[in-house]
Amino acid sequence: MKAASVAALICAVIVLTATVVIAKHSTIGIYAIVDKVVFEPDEKSPERIRIWGVFVVPVPMSSGHYREPQRGYLYFKIAPGMEQASKREWGELKALAGTGQCIGFAHYWVANPADPLGNPHHSLEVQVHRNGDEAAPDIYPLPHRRGIVRSADEVAPEVDLDYESIMAKLHKAWR
Image (cartoon, rainbow, N blue to C red):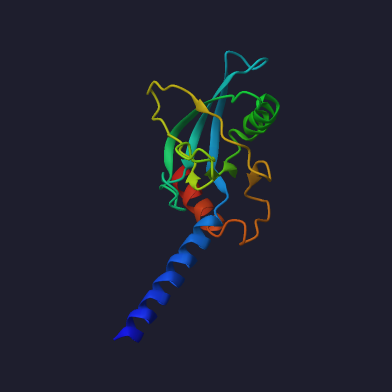
């Protein structure tokens, strides 16, 4: 009886550890096919960005999973100290708008706002707004370490295990 309990406990630990490892391999925070980008107040000195298209975003609370594709827009403002990186990425997003290309950007894992040490065990929380909805801008997320990842880029399985399947779902929803 005791041996069976120990064996069950060991199996549970192995399964839970494997689940965490798989979830930790998701590094791309937002997958998208961008239709249109608008800078606010203007393109010369943007402070905010609206990105229209189809998006796959993380399920909140460190799940390691993503929501199903959603059509709408993302609305962001620049985080203090991140002006150059954000504007560079926003320029790339604008250039990719309307091409029908699947892309990935931003980090999946972010600092947990409830943790005083800011441990990155919290998934990025992004709201896809429906066209016509009014929204307050979210802070633009940290850029992905590879910048904007395009569908033509080679993505190693150890970087994002679900990359290909997410891109396929995204493209199907976009059509």
